[in-house]
Length: 110
Length: 116
Image 1 (cartoon, helix red, strand yellow):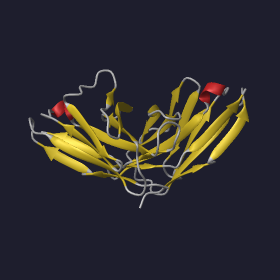
Image 2: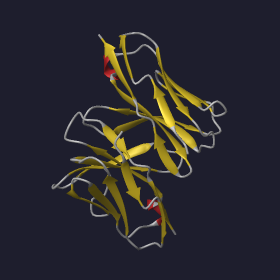
Image 3: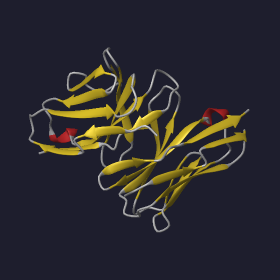
């Protein structure tokens, strides 16, 4: 059974710092892995999607990596800003279902 | 954490038929539910937001008459794809939020729809 874990559960850092969010999964047989952002009271915003054949994807200040063999993905945020404060979720597309991590709540202090 | 289920997990239907997808919050009351759609190799797109007992709010470009959303109870929302066509083939995902505004959302496993 696929399980997805995100560490840390919460993170608070000063503005301007680079940071890394972690996502691990137990079964390497995945179709893709996605990172999302969730703002309070709003729907999800899709950030990056990494296909199983890819190792990383980049969008602006965000870079996501995928290591299927070790069951890990990281989301790197460069030069963090207060507007980056949100909950970040990773989800693995496995066996035709999305398996969700519990999320990392990120707070960027001005 | 709280559990959200979807039924069916996958469905294949003929063009022109209607398909209903259920989203249930199993151990909490969901005042707000969100419906998303994801085409292959593309990002998740928000389709609509539904609040229990009121009409759903649709995102721009989503046809409300084609994608009927009913949120009649605090534990169940349904999405009906009416007169489905092959271009409606997609992965449909719901999420549920307890209360309104600022509360944690919980996501369902998704429903894969294939229209022949």
